Each structure stands twice: as structure tokens, then as C-alpha cells.
Image (cartoon, rainbow, N blue to C red):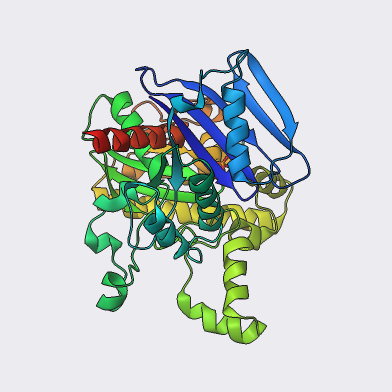
Length: 398
Ligand code: ADP
């Protein structure tokens, strides 16, 4: 079964095509259509024969998918005989009102996602816009939404619950739902294979453009630093992370701005960017190394907050077998990994500084004798979405 997994931006469509009939679950092709809506858009695909780029007028995401299917079915170089071979398009969807799990996209799902456009302003609007278009223009291809909250449905109510009136929690769904579910699920699955056991306690640190820690016991999420929205928890590249809501009336009063303007600042001009004016961790590390005080502060705040959740999850799980770093920062930043693991010998967490400095790809970073293993594992969210999409289609047939 061939599944196309889509990653949408407001002007981009990135994809991977998986063949899940093959036990090795290979990626047959990956590609991207960028600058959708511009006069000319580059459509790039990486095929076994090599990369190919075409320039074409791509006014919307419907045409972008058609371009992708054309390149995948090219008689000379393509990997598909016909577009009918694509069993479904799977989406790593973020959040919807009163909805989680893995579902076929229909009118009700789109409405539930649209109802949370303001909860997930960077994610839901481009997804629902593109999904509506695809449902209309390519009705023959099933669309499947695998929600990021799905993996976290196992979090106990006592950890999901904010201390707010009952009606807000139960009727309005104001809870710590948790996100980055596909990434944390991949880490849980892969670490069970690496450790050769299904009952391990793992703290998964997904650190990239957005950031979260998850506490995982026996493959099930027991906690996530992300709460009601993707703006919560740790600071993100430009999103705020946790903040006391009673700061809001002060900001509204002092700036004279509307609630909408303040929320925009919290969702796009805060996080690491808000502290130091830079949002790429490589730039922040370089600036901090050259003595930029604000960049150093951003790095310190980031590491301090990761350690806050690490401590909380070590207690929640009653210890850990492994701490795993993933995402662009988790896989690459020796500075962040070293900062997070500093002085934790009492907890049985000891990083090998040489392994940390030289790690490439999937690697163990813990020192000889460290009670808790420390790993870096490249995540594979698309594979999880492809598997979930296949499983949904299979369950619908049976
Ligand atoms: P996204 O969440 O947008 O998918 P990624 O997981 O690709 O983002 O992570 C992007 C982040 O990873 C950026 O802040 C980038 O600076 C950081 N990053 C990538 N490579 C390195 C590196 N070698 N050292 C430090 N940070 C890195």
C-alpha cells in the first residue's frame, strides 16, 4: 500500500511517498512544491534516478498535489504506474475541537479544525484551506488526519487537568492535550527496538522549531510539556511557551493593543526570538559564543526550562531508562544536550562529552556506567503518519 504523507505550509507542499506493502517501509520518493501562488513555483522530486525540478504555475495546493502526482507517474522516471496507486494522503494534523485520534477528513473534521484556528494559528488555517481544496479537486484520494494529540490520550486526567472550573475543562476542552505526538510515538517505538524491551521509561525531548518533552512508560505517554495549544510549555523558536495568563491584562493596558495583536506577538514574536531577536538556534549559539548577552540569556532560559520538565518527568515516571534527544536541535546541538544533562550524576544521568561532540545519526551519548542511557535518535514523524493512515484504511475495510 502506497501512502503519500503531506506536510503543508501556507505556500508550500512537502511530501514523502511510502511503500508500506514492503516490510522495510521504504520512502519511494520525496519532494516539495514551494512558492505556491507565485508566478512560477519550483516542483522538486527526489526519485531513485536522481532529483528533478520543474518550474510551473501552481496557484494552489490542489495543483501542487497534481504536479507531485505527475512527477511520481512520469513514464520515464516515476515510481508509480498511475496515481490510483496512492491509497491515501496522510496529514500530521495538529488539533481540532473535541477531536483526536486518526480520522478520515470530512466536513465535520474540517469544521472542528477550523474552530481551533485561533488555538493553532500557525498550523490549522493552512491545513484546512488545503484539505478543503484537495477534497474538492481530488475526491478520488482519501485524506486522513493523524492528530498530534493522539499519542497523548493516555496521559492521566490528573496531569491533563488545569485547575479551572469543571465546565471549562469538560465542556470547552481546556486541558493539557499535548502535541508532537507522531515524533514522541516514533521515539517510543524506536527506543523499544533499541533497548529490546517494551516496558522502558523514556523521556523524549523533541527540540526543533517547536519544542516539547514527553514522559513515556511502556510505550504510552504519561505527560507532555505542551498543553492546550502549541504555544505552551517550553519556549519555541518564536512562540511563547508557558506564561501566567494574568500577565495579559497588564500587557493590554500598557501597550494599548487589542487582544488579537497581543496574541499575535505571543504566537509569532516571542519564544527565543522574543528574548534575543534570533530564532534559529545555530545563530543564537554563535551570537552567545561571541558574547551577545541576550542570546546567552535565550539559551539559558531554554535549557533551564527543559531541565524543569526533565525533573518533573523523572519524578512522574519514578526514574527513567533513557533520555532521548530528537528534532533539529536535539539531533544536532551539543551545547543544548550538554547544558540539559549538566550535573545530573545524582540522578544517574551522565553524558559522555566526546560522544556528545561527535555524534552523527542514531547514537548513544551516555558515559560508561550511566544508570540512565542518553541517546540522540533522528525522528521520523512521516513514517508514523503513514502507518496510522494505513491502519485506518485497513480498519475501515475490515
Ligand atoms: P521544525 O520544528 O521546523 O521541523 P527542525 O526540527 O528542523 O524544525 O529544527 C530546526 C532547529 O534546529 C533550528 O533552530 C536550527 O537552528 C536547529 N539546528 C539545526 N542544526 C543545528 C546544529 N547543527 N546546531 C544547533 N542547532 C541546529
